[in-house]
Length: 504
Image (cartoon, rainbow, N blue to C red; front, side, top):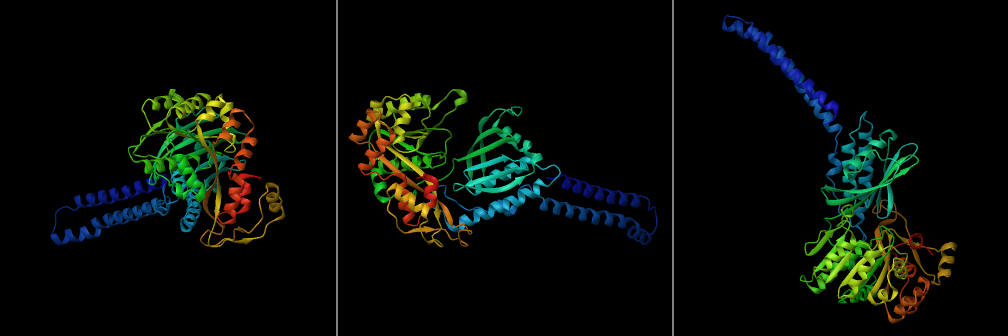
């Protein structure tokens, strides 16, 4: 509760006490007399201060209630709204519009709270994170500028500004994040990383914290890893039908290594969970599936899920070695990021386990040389890997207002350079259902490289990634750019969006 409300409540109490005290004083001083005289005196002298005190107390109480309602820490109009958004698949247009409106509404409430002489940073931070969870933001950015602190959400891959916060409160906001993540407040000149749990009306989440010193102060990036969301389905992620059927065949293999490559925030972990869900549905609930994650993003009852803790020395490699002793059928490793984890994962793929993991690489072909750079022997990599998958997320076109769009000269040159045929493509227009943006949600584009004998020979020979890509394309792989252009032809996205995300 704010200070003004406290003051008004105190005044209300004083007014009531004063009225009661005055009535008692006058009642005691009436003395003996007739009942009529006592009644007149009572009405004339005793009741007046009591009524005045009561009325004034009620008036102040009313003002206090108004003050509390006018300056809420968590505005009811905001917290009562709850659209359901999908983190990856194309979302309903009404929900997307609601998310935009809620971000604007959140910004208005935060501006009201920030105008107070001493704003409640704890309440502001709670409201900010609750808003991010409500609109299914993947990240919250707190970036210091010369004129203020810009706070923005990343929703469906695009940054949406929430508010420019007063510059004088920036350090207090950053310190609140440090307190939540249990990071030292005095360290201002070094990067810091941490995390903290978050419980909200939209479910639990683990917030990954990254703090980086800049010329205007510390910049904060908060990655939201939700742990209470429904397990995604492969069929809803945007796989073309032929590619989905081939990928499901690979998921049916009894052993081997399946790697998903892509940039940060490209939906790799979502694809892994969907793959595990398909494996469980196709093989039965008795299939033992174990995961090693940082953090656990989906709480799945039938999975044996383990959270790594680097601060305590429990790494992906240690977790994987421990999980192998549990005799699982399928293993998911959140990320292969070091040589020890890479070598252990390769051994797991060779010893009768199906292992799925993510890796930071530019393409499906580039995943092999990335592991070789980590010290994995090429012949072991070639023998253990079943397939690699590369993916990107692009904004989806609004199906209600999209329209055919002529190719620009620049786009035509890019298509010709990539050897892709020209054709009819679509562009954004903007309508009420997409809030005038022309886009609704996001969808994924994929390329998949199965390890064939020719690919295996190329890996053993340690040829460049470009050469492995050529062999895979010759054997039928659809490259990421061509897959994106094909999605653009169907109107799922725009050609410019594909070039923005994939390049080319």
